[in-house]
Amino acid sequence: MLKKIFFSSIFVILFFSISLSYANDQILFEDMARRKLLIPKKIKKIVPLGSAMRFITYLKAIDKVVGIEAYERKNKNESGRPYTLAISNVVDNLPVIGEGGPNKLPDFEKIISVKPDLIITMGLDLSLVETIQQKTNLPVLYLSYGGRGFVDLDSVKASLTILGRLLDKEKRAKELVVYLDSVVKDLYKRTSKVKNKPKVYVGAVSYAGRHTITSTQGNYFPLKLINGNNVVDVLGKREHLFIDKEKIIEWDPDFIFLDTGGFEMLKEDYSRNPDYFKRLRAVKEKKVFSVLPFNFYHTNIEIALANAYYMGKIIYPHLFKDIDIVKKTEEIIYMFNGVYAYEKLKSNYLGYGKISFKETIRVE
Image (cartoon, rainbow, N blue to C red; front, side):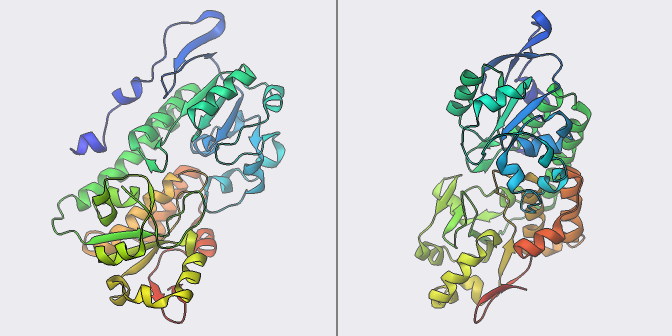
């Protein structure tokens, strides 16, 4: 089961194969949607769309970028997306080829003007990918995290490996894949033998905006990594969901984690109806904690992994007693982005801590 869920070997990657067609210094490549693309053997110039810039930063391939979405420039230095901190001194010097944002089309003429060898997309609907390719007459690579609103580790590793191969960053891609596997293996080893699992609810989950306690996630990625008992999973859903407040009372979770991306909405909700929150057993027993938002222009893998360690330390303290959560968070963020970001994350998103419910709510 462990191998099936987490540790698929490189054969998963080889599914996305390169053929031996080399006419005119090009190769025939099959992307993650099984689309066949004719692309240059040597890729020197790229345009990332959707959340592809994140993976380009992970791979240290920013020097190949010749055009960016305005979204990357307007929101640079955003600690909620740690990769922006690593490229903030670069984006102002790159041409803007479109507005950016969820499923927004770029300016086709501007893309053509910067003459990329390859357009790289991540988190875009396949229909938009096809449209971009038709309008620009340039190869457009489709990559994926797994699906809308959830993370699939095999897809993440496949995306890293494909990009590493195409951008001559195979060593870096392998380094990240090995690190990902080591983190997942460590989390699994710590928690796989737990039998009596406390019930957990994760609320205020950020998804296409900020929300209050009723916003949650089936198959919540960080909780899945520590074999947690997510009460929402009884619904058989793995995407983002809105839950009726009374259903949360009915589930009666032992622990509640609240995404601080929605903290202002939570405060407003609490001020309107504090009695509701005080009915929750986790509130009564002071077992409500904060987690950082990891869905911000798609998924920040590093923050999701840090959340898993924090949740593990709270739910199973004896199994994570050796973990200093700040040091671990900084380690993970630095591994992916080459920068430290927890202190800035804490200043913008309150950081990890216990949530108190008094005259207002706050992270302690």
